[in-house]
Image (cartoon, rainbow, N blue to C red):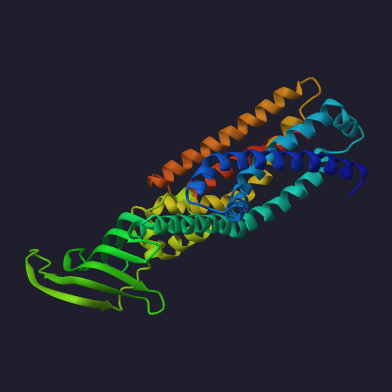
Length: 370
């Protein structure tokens, strides 16, 4: 790197670091406002509160990184443009790409950082903070005489099209790992009910990958007519052919935005070859996280042309245009998510079209500066 590269990188890193710290500080204050009172009500100790927020903060990194990158580039490049430093370099025959090559290299490095954040750190942060919060909640419920309600999830439904089974669970306890009020319907290839298991409660053995039901009955039906053929009560029934993991069942009823990359990956692996109506919205979120990998380069390609606009153009105009394009990109991403979730377009297309569209526009803007 030459002297200008060192100078540009140093100036940008200073602003980028300040913005990262400032935005993380604001999000920390928001997190305190949203969660601190609840943690105190659950009788969390000072160490547990500190550990919870230490685990929670990395989940904000991807969002903060993108916004801090855009604002820092607009500020630093705008300052250099205002002092006519870019004009002097261009007069000496230095091209735009050569002037900003250190920024592009940093953008490529940030893409690798985004891969690591989305695939490792952020999923760990989301899941670890949820587990810690749930454990504090369960402990508080048990101490306050609500042990029977600790970690309950109500009205859980799950359509296992692969094995032709439909599950209905009145309530599932994450604390006790037990389902209450269980109904499992087994279907024939035409999705007509042929057998139903009704049980007072049931539990899943992860080692044997089998379900055990208690205090219920097995009802058999004639698939064509729906007439009950038999109804056999049981005290205990073990089904080694039932492999549905209750953790996966409970995850599938949550919003895609609340799931970590690991949880989304589990859903993708399980339902990739099924025509499940719920699958699309999780697929859009999953592919969207993969597409976010290249957002730093798109942001740089949007910021550079407008921040380095001509000498007769007010730098504030270029900054406004860059921010406007970033808002447009976010709106296109939301639109793609809605269209993909409603199965109007393919989930992969919904996730990648906003990025590819903005990338094409950014390439045109950069080339037009030459």
